[in-house]
Structures are given as structure tokens and as C-alpha cells.
Amino acid sequence: MISPIIEVENLVKVYPGGTRAVDGISFNVEPGELLGFLGPNGAGKTTTIRILATLLAATSGTARVAGFDVTTQAADVRRRLGLAMQTPTLDAFATGRENIELIGRMHRVGRAELKRRTDELLELMGLTDVARKLAGTYSGGMRRRLDLACALVHRPRVLILDEPTEGLDPQSRIALWEELERISRDGTTMLLTTHYMEEADRLCNRVAIIDNGRIVVDGTPANLKAGIGADSVTLQLEASGSEDMARLHEEVRGLLAGFESLESVTPEPFGVRLAIRDAGRAIPELMRRLDRNGHDVHVIGLAVGRPSLDDVFVKYTGRRIRTEAADQPLILGW
Amino acid sequence: MIGDFFYEAWYLSLRTLRRFFRVPANWIGIIFFPLIQLFVFSQLFKDIIQLPGFRSSGSGSYLAYLAPGQIAFTAFFAVAWSGSAILVEYRNGYMDKLRATPIFRVSILVGELAPLFIESAIMAGGILLLSVLLGATIKTGLIGAALILVLSGLFGMAWAGTSFVPALLTKSEQATGTLSLVFFPIAFMSTAFVPPALMPGWLQTVNSWNPITFLIEAIRPLMVSGYDWAAIGKALIAIAVLGLVLQSATLWAFRRLTA
Image (tube, rainbow over all chains, first blue to last red; front, side, top):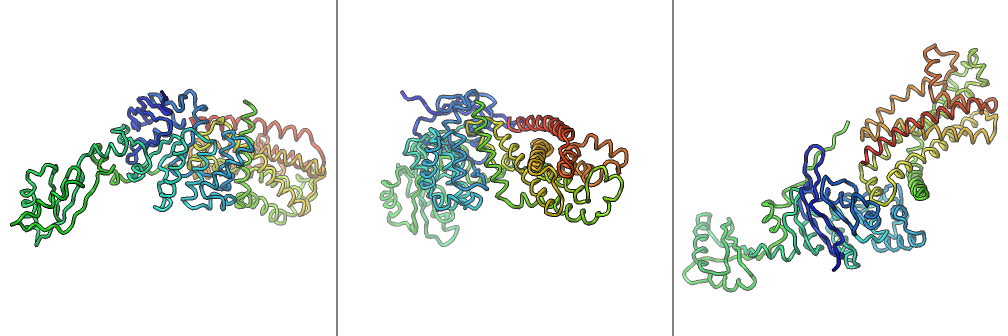
């Protein structure tokens, strides 16, 4: 049996002032897995990551990375860990190459290997042409890629990424996803946090939804979505006014009575929204029922929505993730 | 183990030096004020040298009297805001990036402090060179000049604590900038502009404790007369005591910040 590469048990972090940022989190990550922490800002994702990266002491509980305890064997953990934080942290007055090389040296990558590895990473991240320019002159996407190169220079067994695509334009985001997929295929275990549903859906083997410092549910994206059950079918109906529409709502209810795939009917101003199991197979039957003689239900538009991780998030937390906008406190010092 | 520490501190220091010298504003800002004082005051107060108190200093002109003080001022200015850089990197997360690598935590601090020796020495050297171009002399020649740079560098490294301690304790660049002003009078009360004989009694007392005065009075003979080992010894002791006190406080504040 292969033992997990990240083992977290009952982790708790209470900040001075009493905020319970992490409130009893337990999870394992198997070698080669790509686990995503999905949750709104303030859910406790970054705190968990900082504890795993040995940058923050937990209040209680244990965390082990590659078999080493993050508190008592921090140096052993650090040797095996690559880290990229929420905003790229670079030395703006050093070139791209110098940035990678310094982190490599701190990890004791040998001289010849460092040269080779730096060349390789610059090439991989598409930064070869700007390797001699100061990192301070880089664009957002370039900064991300350089940050990632720094995190990879010592070939870590575990890569921890906090919001890796935050603040990137769609194009750079997709490019970075492809990069991360490649790194994952090479066998590096990855733990990333995100509040982008698509990101979790596309990249992760497994997603843990985290809210208020707890993991509320975890599983593969497919399993989590399957747990939601029905697909959503939206029908746009032709009506002469809002009273007519109300009448049509009742008519649809009557026509669909006894339709075994149907779970619910929700009236909408433009028509109805139906929750239907296995919509792909059920739609012909649905249309047949709506087309029955003697009724004036005219469908002028139809859309089928598969459950998304968004729906999973709503189901388990009762909120949509996107409405939880970043409202981080201003830092006021004197 | 100790080799690891030197390896880390070496590469982190090189990075710090690169950061310093790649931004001309850094060194222009340091050199500007002493340079202006050297230019303007040496002309403005040209005749002040004829006052009796100056004779014992051995300086032939006010420029010659002023130069050692401005060299010391440069070492002072070179580190007056030095704590800000570590604060910026604490804030933007770069320090965390370094802390997440398997290095000694203290290497990060030493990588910031050690380069200040070079920075202060080179900046002071610039003013030394300019004062020679303006007509000052160095009686002790190249060896004396090297000694002046070493003294300036050591002083800068020690004095940097006055910026690092407030920076690490307040975590505020503004506070660090403002608090640095508190130390300016210490520089102005030194013997940079007039000899102690022309000062009121209380200022003479201040100067018997002023580390900047010890530095200036060690540099002055090297430029105008010859080696004054007693003055150099006193300056080294003053710098050592200052450095020990301030850098212990810096280390304490750094550990507190990164705990």
C-alpha cells in the first residue's frame, strides 16, 4: 500500500483575536493526485496552505508532508515542497534567471544541475526570451509562470499553489492550466486552492469544498456533480403577458403530471425551469407530452444544463461562491 | 552547518547588493545631501576656519574640515532607511518564499545586513573621492583611504539597527521613514561642522558619547595629519558597542516578526 503524501488530521488554527480560520480539517492526498480546495475567500484555504508550507504554526492537529511533520521536521518538509502563493512573489530587481537560480541555490541544487534546470524551466514557461530582463518588467502572466518556475526548480515531490490563476486574463489562465496539467502528468502531487469552478472542474482529480474552516464535502468532480442528481432544463414559452404566462405554468404542470423523470417545476418569467433526471434521454418524451393536442403551450427555446460544481457548492453551503466577493480587511498600520 | 549559513548569507547578500545598485535612486538619494553640504558649506563658511577652535583639528581649509564629517554623514544616510527593504519583502511575501526553502531563518536577516557594509563603504568612498577632487587631501594615502572605507562600512552596518528595529517592530514603511528623522539631530550635533571647542558645554557632553563623532574624529586625522590609532581604536569600540546593542535588538525584533 502506498501511504498518502499529505496527511492532515484535525487541523485547527485560531488567530489571536479568536478567529477560527481552520476548524478541524482532515484530509489525505495520494502521490500523484491533484487535489483542489474550492471555497470563497476567508474559507480557510490559505491558512491551511500556510500551515502545510511550514509558514504558520497550527493551534492543534497534525500535518505531514512526504512523511515529515510540518512542525517538528520543517526543514525536511521544505526540501520536498514547491510553493507559489496567491500573488507571485518575485525579486523585481533580479532577472527571471536570477530569480529561479536564487531559489534553486537556497534548495542546494548543484551548480551544473541548476544551470540545466533553469534553462529547462525558462523554456518550459516560455520565458527564455526575457530571461535577462528584470522580473519587475514582466506582465502578470509572465510573473505567474516565473513564480511557478521558482517553485519547481528543485523538483519538489509536492507542489502547493494558492489561487494559481487569480488575476490572469482568460488566455493566460488556459495556458497556465495546460502547464499545470503537464506538471501533474509528470507525477508531481499538487494541492491547489481556487475559487474558480471551471478551474477545479478542469484540473483536479479530487475537489474538497471548504467553507468556514471546514471541509464540507470532497470527491471527484464527476461524483460530486452526480450527487446533485437532476439536470436542469429551461423552457422558454410563448405568452401574451404575465397573466397568460401564469396560466401556461399551470398548463405545463398538468401536462407533465406523472412524468417519471421529472423532479420539480420552477416557474420563471420567461417560461419554466425543470429538474429532470438524465435529461438527454428524457427530452423526446418531454416534448411529446408538451405537444399534446388541444393545448397552446409553444416552446420557443430550450436549454439543458448539466450540474456544475457551482451547484455542488450551493447544495453544501447554501450560497453561490461568486457572490462571496473578496472583502478582505484593509491593512491599516501607523 | 556553519558552511550552510555562509553559503546562504552569501547568495542572499549578493541579491541584496544587486537590488541596491540596480536602482540609481537608491544611491543618488544617499549621496545627494552630503554632496550638497560639501559643495555649499565649504564655500559658504569658507572663513570660519580662521576661528581659533579649528586650528587644533589640523585642517588647512574648511573643506578639509568638512570632508570627514560628510563621509560619515554618507555612511549614516546609506542606512537611514535600510529597514524598509526587508519590510517590503515581508509584506509582499518574498520573505515567505525564502522561509519556505530549507535555510536558516537568520540567513535572511544577515543577507540584508551584511551588504550594508559594502553599500556604506562604497557610498562613503564616493564622497571621499569627490572631496579629494574638490581639494581635500588624504595624508595617509591609499591605505588610509581603505581604512576610512572600512570604518564607514562598519559604522553603517551597526547604525542600520536604528532603521531595522523600528521597521520590524512597526511593520510600517511610513513609521520607519518618520522615525529615522529622530536620529538626524545626532548626526548634526556631531563634530561634522565645528570642533567641540566652539560648542556649548552640553553639546560637548553629547559629543563625548556620540558614535558619529567617534567615527568623524577617526577619519579626520587619516585625511589631514596621519594615523591616530587611539582615535581609530575609540571609533572601533564605539561601533562595536553600538552594533552589539542595535543588532541584538534587530535580531530580537526579526525573530518576533517571523515567529
